[in-house]
Image 1 (spheres, rainbow over the protein chains, first blue to last red):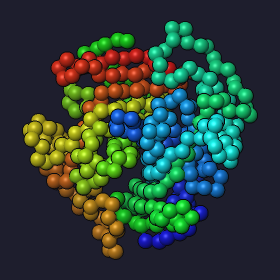
Image 2 (image 1 turned 180 degrees about the vertical axis):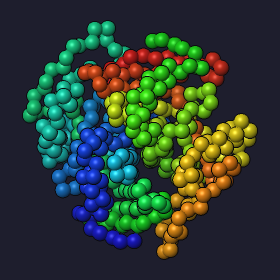
Image 3 (image 1 turned 180 degrees about the horizontal axis):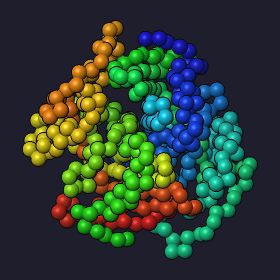
Image 4 (image 1 turned 60 degrees about the vertical axis):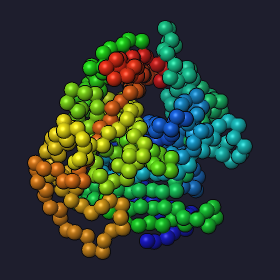
Length: 201
Length: 201
């Protein structure tokens, strides 16, 4: 077992390599995020990786405040993301707490990051936030086309979603038997260190 | 809302089409299965779709009885599988109860299905069940190569895993705005019927 300072999470290096090795597929930035419903059942859906929050190890995603996952995360903020890379045949699993950064978030620095995330979206992705509330019966006369919202100022229902991993499981299916590493964050806050261990697949 | 008998789940037809449309990618049979850990946190990992259980709507997967998900399912048998199809840009989410079919399962019909699932695996997939217990520190001298187990009789740690959906959410990202359908199983046992509704994405 090897320990490294929290500032340089040791799983970032194999993840960066996987992102490079799989960059020819646009879908290589899609991962599946599991959360817990209010009734205790799991929920699971595809989300898009939007990079890391500045110099932290937190994965950035975006969501609509009207989506079911926002209510689920309000109720239970634990999540696990599963990221499978097709080309390099690797899987990363990230378990950690989720943070919702909405328009009224008390931290001004995170509010600025929310704005930056909005500005980094494509027009098509931004326009989805003008659509009707999700998971409602379809209207008889659905709107045709979508307005293009302001590029600078996020719509109020735009939410930055952060996953702060405390455990990362990396499985490499290429060798036989497969290789697997388990990373875990030990300690708390300023004192945290990542441990890493090769484990059986 | 349209209702159809349980014997022909109406989501099977779009799923069959997606399997056809995406068949050029071997990874199109990989999906992510979320379960609940004993401490209430979600878990999420990639599994392989092994077809449907005979003439039912239950998705078949396989697992090792020594894997963590088996303990999780013993504790809470709700699961949600998220299946994203890269080529056709569609997502299916399946929420339902999971069933573990081990060597000593009381139902002889399910025990036979477990044997059939074993026989349908590749040699490489079968040999994985001879590997050491998962998620243990790697031994200093790992075994080189893997024995090829008997093709007919499953190893005792081989487990057939079934997911019996009660809700299915199908999202088609091709049109703009996207199309989405929500299927849910209403009633119980012999009386069950599937409802289907177009909902906002």
